[in-house]
Image 1 (cartoon, rainbow, N blue to C red):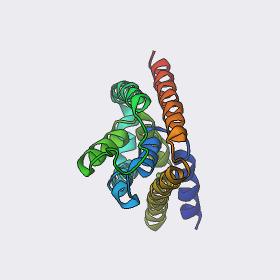
Image 2 (tube, rainbow, N blue to C red; image 1 turned 90 degrees about the vertical axis):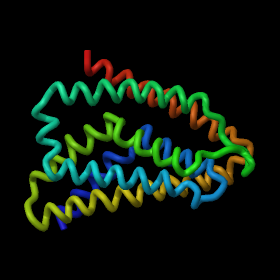
Image 3 (tube, rainbow, N blue to C red; image 1 turned 60 degrees about the vertical axis):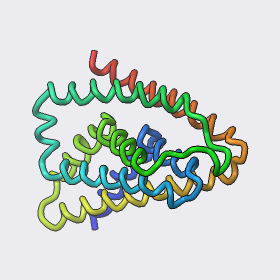
Length: 200
């Protein structure tokens, strides 16, 4: 029970802050004409997080934490990616009705994978925090801890998609979504700047 509760609390603590991955999943719920059409992004983000958690628990954290050049390389690539994503989100226009163009399945999967695997915050949080926390447990306890983290991740992404769909119904003009996009872009640029300062 301790391992399960630890996994749930830790996973929620890491996944709650607004980040590029959360923004993308939420925006798909808000821009796709039907809720089911947003699920490719949701499922892809959840699978990517699951893979990162499994890799972290089974030793990737030890590798990354041992090699400073690898950590710097990941963060540098992440800064560039966050700058690009912030620009893309800033320029994006929210859909106002079902005739507007929404991302097709293939692009949803590519974008969701990118914001998961190229997001330094997600990688460092999962590898550095979940990976090292998992070292506290062995055997069944470690499996329960890992499972709890993964379940929280899946529930969170489906909840975000649903929240985006609900907001779309409440925001017929698209004004709220436009404001959300601008705020998100500024937040993402701020994250990139924070990471860049950490590299200097």
